[in-house]
Length: 437
Image (cartoon, rainbow, N blue to C red):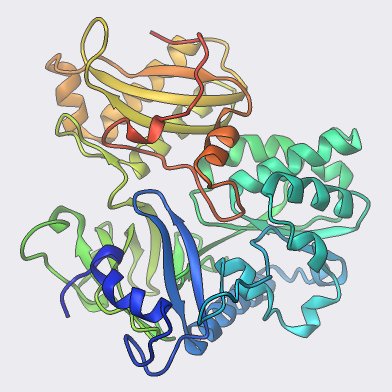
């Protein structure tokens, strides 16, 4: 099978969406997962019964692994909330269609339904901001024990809860909250802000779900990375990142991986996605067991000057600066500035702070130094005076939420792209006058 991204498979998927049978997999899929792509608009991913079972089974194994290691079962005795898409399916076409999290919400085991929130009525509110306010009203006085979602939307939910309740921290509002389940984006850039909002330690459990399949999850017995789900409905290949886009890329099996290697994920699934380039890159942390860490996206990088900076590097550089300069970052994205009004080209960081650093210039310099340490190509461009050190634009509160909404990406599964190789994604991102430079 040749390697294919979504666009290469679109001709087949369009036939499936139109109601065709036996196109990519015997019969028709049970559902179509609708996702918001950052580069190619809406995508429709087939979800068969086998893949639906795999999604639920992997999530169950993640929770059971956590319970086995921690001994904590208290969260099943109180309320649990899953910030997710609407469980109401679009049935106007040949196949029921919805967001992955909304589809899965229709198949939550009965033993978890009794304490689960939000209610069906609230969960089906179409506008995300209205829905969050309704979720806040429905949960603010409940005994919340487990909260699950992608970090930026949990952050929004927590901020709205505190504004509504008048409490100072989520830990005070929900004294028996004991577990946060997160996934979809790297938790690290949000960790400082979420810790401040929580106000006390809460166990964290990371997952790596995708519409194409549940890829990996954190087993607390193996803290070095996420445990790859290798035994259920997905066969994996791994393309070394340096081969991505080449005419004849190496395609490695699990047995050929090396610890520390950075690879693009390729899937063959029980929904008929053959040689499918997921778009995520992973770094191998261990071979026995097979542990991975998400390192970025194959199409999300900045290399306007040949530096090929990836998400893993900018997130690590930001984390280094946060340790040295106390502040709270809400969101950020990075793009190249190739034609500045004055001076050399540079990377431009668009950052929304909840609490800005005391010295924005020093904060930016620390990020730049850390990025140079992680990417020698970027360092050479700085030292060779091809680029100047990065510039930070500090954005007003709410800028990213408004930007995502303007792009039709204000739901529980949409996430801010970390990097762009040009400035096309920046259209509509409001700026203020606070610029480090």
